[in-house]
Amino acid sequence: MANLQELFDFYLNTNPTKWKLRNACNFLIHACQALNVNAPDEIDEELLLELPAALDRFFQKTPQKAVHDKGTLAEMIGRFGPIDGLQSVLQQLLNDPDKNLRQFTLQSLEYHAQNNLHNVLPILEHYRKSTDPLMKQVSAIILARLSSLTQWNEQIKQLICDWLREDDASYVQLIYQEITRQASNSVDSVERKQKYVRMQEWLETEFKFLK
Image (cartoon, rainbow, N blue to C red; front, side, top):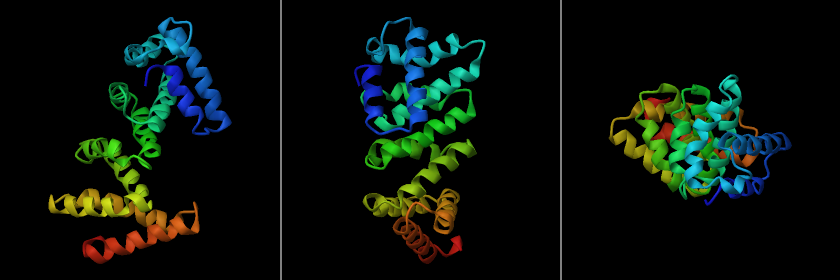
């Protein structure tokens, strides 16, 4: 990723809602103002590293506006993925003082993981071992949702088996709780709901303690 304009262009091609697109356009303006540049294509990888802190300074008197813009940046990265020099920016957002932003940043990675789980799995693994219960739960929810996708179902099953061999039943329990919730309440599609049901049945058959 060479600059912020290219990141925005990628985000645009993912068809964000009109409301999100408006937020993203406003964010580009604020990013240029915060970094004192004329256009987002001037915000290269080096300046992107400075952007979260620059937004904090720019919105010093209205810190929630900084959080809002950093959330937009997090969603852009979540769609593009933690690749091509964006990992360090992502880490700043994942460690932001605002817990809601930290949670949203991690949640945003689900979009990229739908087709590129290998890029996101190390981050989810990190939070599996985290002492932060909220971030741990968010990572489990993401994996539970990804388990309904055919391309990742078997890999996630294997991961669950591996984690239980490591005696991490509590994390598997979090995944199971989300799958059970989705099996009962999912309205995405009948097909996806059935996949959650099958995953729930597999978990209960293989691991009796989950029932």
